[in-house]
Image 1 (cartoon, helix red, strand yellow):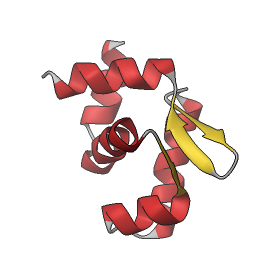
Image 2 (cartoon, one colour; image 1 turned 90 degrees about the vertical axis):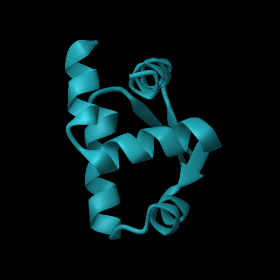
Image 3 (cartoon, one colour; image 1 turned 30 degrees about the vertical axis):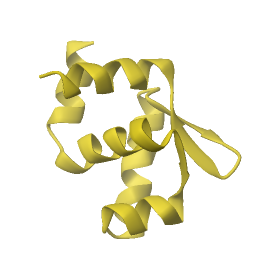
Image 4 (tube, helix red, strand yellow; image 1 turned 45 degrees about the horizontal axis):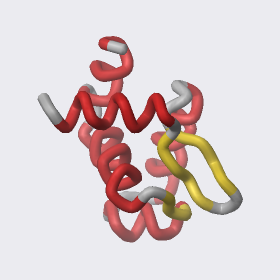
Length: 79
């Protein structure tokens, strides 16, 4: 768990995306790009990393936090 917290905390955009998905529950890529104000390739890369770490999952066209993602987001939020 510490490794995942460190992985997210090391990159501000990862942290923002985790927080955003925690607040909104599920979002499509276009909405994430518009909300975060970063380039689509950057969002794609971050989402790919978060899926690989099993923190985010794709549901239709939307992305949402997994249970593990929710746990990690809570830990980071409380730091």
